[in-house]
Amino acid sequence: MADTVLFLEYPKCSTCQKAKKWLDAQGVTYTDRDIVTDSPTADELRQWHERSGLPLKRFFNTSGMLYREMELSKKLPDLSEKEQYALLATNGMLVKRPLLVTAATAIPGFKEAAWEEALGQ
Image 1 (cartoon, rainbow, N blue to C red):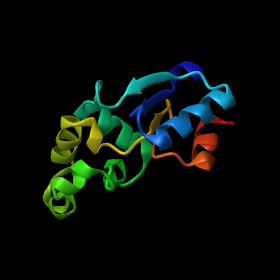
Image 2: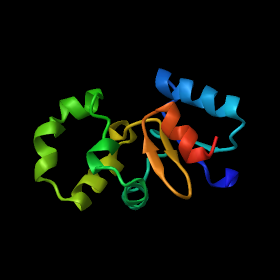
Image 3: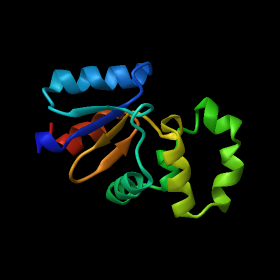
């Protein structure tokens, strides 16, 4: 399973740095991807969302500057899932990070217990 772990991060994000250190300390082998320079596609986001079992809103970086500037809290309820995936794919800064993707699940944000469970640690 080690080769199926994808870690999406914004390198300047302190939570992402903490999550990366945690992954390294656990000896997890993963593919590291910069969420800004290599933003997820709408199709990837759809697959990860479906895999996660979480509400789509959890994939949005609701505390981010761009989210607030675009006033997405007011706009999201009126958008279809397809439109939300397309919107998320326009800019990696809109996506909640870090994002851990495995063959079985996808977890936006770093919660050690959830990551341990997902990785079988």
